Length: 561
Image (cartoon, rainbow, N blue to C red; front, top):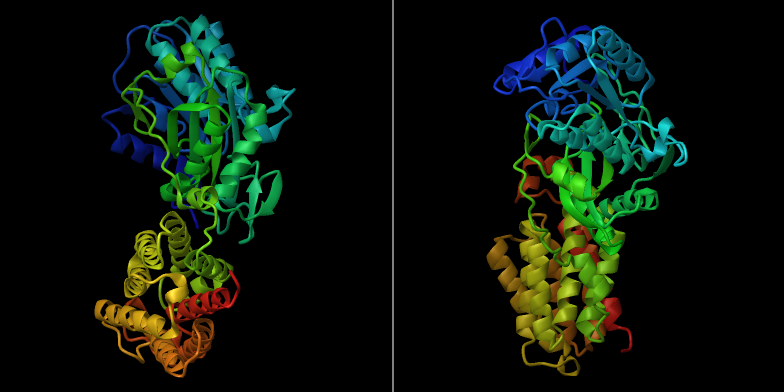
């Protein structure tokens, strides 16, 4: 991805657009690349933050009542000059001194330091808070060597609240120092960022890899690992931070920060596990922030920051603020207890002894093992989510069946309802009706009472409901092209006198062959029909997943209790 805008004018162009869009809240500093609060405040400490651009909403987006009074920006990932810092600070200063806040980078240290010297020569007192929250950039016993990353936001929020309530410069500086000492951040990247005008990213990450311990200036991480799931990534981030956290009473602010390209939905998917792990460690996230706070242009990745609170910091963090990039009413909302997820239900619920649990669990394992291939087949002419949907559905089905094993019928009904709810989409509804209607056809029968004929009758009814709901016909390259041959083969085996395992296994073999044969068909229904020619030569994903499922069930049926 190439960032829009010419490299030589990027800073000017985006800052002009920002002030135009948010002119009700901010105004430009005359003759400088900086912004100020729209309304001039009464005499108070001026909190002036800044750094290179490419990090929005840091830094300009955090200017407003309750947070920063001014922000100065440099070129992309480059510190602003001492002159720009000086002009912005002079414009923000109202007689009570200036607190400078920025990340611990040499260019920023030099230029902000020069500006502070110039202010001092003119009789304006200033102090500085260097943010050093990034645990990957230096050892714990030398925090002065660490960089400032997403923890910038947390420290600036505390400093801004202290200045807003009228604290003097020494007090504002002290609480900012305390906040910095109690803030830790650890991050991961899935893809590098691209500078304005550049044709490619500053670094690349392999499709099966991710970088841990990244910075926010386009540099890669300190360690490359295999691509992690949202849950495993959450564990990695929390495991990195917990040993680093200072002692406290358990109250924390938790910030899951997107680096520019990561979707909010992905961050929320990661946060559930973060919250679980922190709660298990005895921490209470009294404030939770999930979103973009300190980005790195279009970098794909997230960082996790934790601020350990005390009474003073808790009061300051809860204070209201109003900026273009972040608003807070000051209200502290009660934490909502976490609902049990399907994964946790599977963990908490012991495997059942019944045939439904054994059969569905076997099917789940085979679906999980083939999730990527089912997704690949679906991506040929659709959106590639069939494997993921099947895995979600089967996990939910197994968990539901384990909770409701009173009978074959009730277990299958619960499994079908849960599958449809968890998987969603057309496949979710269709697989849900197959499971539920098969259960309905076995109502009143215990496991040992189910004959091949009774099972064939139940499957007949389930397939009839499937056809009525889905309106599919054989030959249209859908699941039905494996389901109908399976149904007919099961009926044939039952009439020939086969027992249940033998009948099901023979029918499953037919379903496998039928699913493979769908490679020669062209889809006539659903989204795949629009790209029908593209799917020629590839078996239908729904037919393939059905063949996998019934094969695994057949193997489970053939095992002794």
